[in-house]
Image (tube, rainbow, N blue to C red):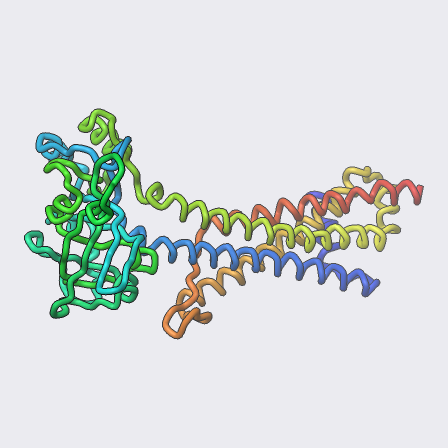
Amino acid sequence: MNFSYYIAKRYLFTKSKNNAINIITIIASIGVFAGAMALFIVLSGFSGLKEFSLSFSNKYDPDLKVLPKTGKYFNYLPEQQEKIAVISEIKQSSKVIEERVLLNFRDKNVPSSYIKGVDENFLNVNAVDSTLLAGAWLHQKEKQVVIGNGISRKLSIGVAGYGDVLKIFVPKPGKGQVSNPSEAFNTISSMVIGIYSINEELDNKYVYAPFSFTQQLLELEPNEISAIEINLAKGADEDKVREKIEEVFDHQVIIKNKIQLNDKLYKMLNTENLAVYLIFTLILIIALFNVGGAIVMAILDKQSNIKTLYYLGANIHQIRRVFFLQGTLLTFIGGVLGLVIACVVIVLQQQFSLVMITASLPYPVLFETKNLVIVFLTIMTLGIIASYIGSTRIKRVIEVNS
C-alpha cells in the first residue's frame, strides 16, 4: 500500500487526542456532505422546473417549422407540396397562417392576440384538440374559431352562445396614409366553437381559425402561407430532413426545431440554472475552506509525528502528500455520502411527492446523471484545491522543527 495513502487514511479515521481537532474535522465533513447534497437537490429541482416549463410548449410545438427567410409569407406551390409529401422522414405536415389581430366582443377588446389559420391536416401534427375545455374543433367550411381560456375570460365570451359574435380586426395590406380609420381594417365575424387551455401564455395568444377563413381575412393569394409545421417520423435524421426541405424551397426558408422556436425560454431557464449553480458553488467554496482549515489544524496537531517521519527518511513531498490525501479523502467521502442522500431525497420526491406546490401539483424534480457528475466534479475540484493549500503548511512546520 502507498505510504502516504496509508498514513492519510489512519489520520482521517483515527481520533485525535485534541478534541478541538476532532470537532473541526467533523464540521469540515458536514460542510462537504451538506454542500454536495444541497447542490444536487437544487440542480435537480431546477431541471424539474425546466422540464415542467417546457413540457407544454414542446408538446404543442412541431418537430420542425418552416418559415420565410424574408417577410411574413411565402408561396407554397402544389409541386412543392408534392415534393414535401414524398420525403419519407416526414410523418405529417400542415400549412398555417399567423397574423396579429384585434379581437372584439361587445364592449371588450383584446389587442395582442394572433389568429392562426390551420388546414384540415393540422390535428395530425398538433393534438391541440386534446386541450379543449369546452366545445369542439373547427369545421373548415364554417366561420368558426377556437380561442384560448385566457382570451375567453378577457372577453367574457363562451362557446356557441346565441347571438355571440366575435369580431376579428386586422390592418388592411398596402401602403400610404389612411384617410378614413373605419376603412383601415379588414373585419370578419365568427362564432366561438371551442375553448382550449394549454398554459397561460398560449391561452392568451392564439385564436385558431379555418385556413380559407384566415386567407380571406388577410387578403392572401391561394398559395401564400406563414409556415409549414412538420412532425418527423420516429428515428428521422433532422439534419437530412432540413437539407431536403431547403432544396425544395431553393434555400429561401428558415427551418426551426422545438428548441429554436423557444430559444428565449431556453436561454432564460439555462441562465437561471447557471446563476443558481454559481451561487451554490460560492457557498461550497466557503464551506470547503473548512477542509483546508482542518488540514492545517491536523498538521499542527501532528507536528511530533511529522518530525519523526522526516527523520525516518520521508521527504517533504511525501509528508505533504499525506495531508493532501487526507483532505481529498475527507472531501470524497463527504461528497459521495451527500450525493447518495440527495439521490434518495430526489427519488422519494418523485415517488411520493413529499413537497407540493399546490394540493394537486408536486414540486417537479428530475434525476439527471449530468447533474450528478457536475456536483461530484465541483466538490472534488474545490476539495482538492483546499487540501493542496492546507498541505503547503508542511514545509513551514518542518523548517520550524529542524
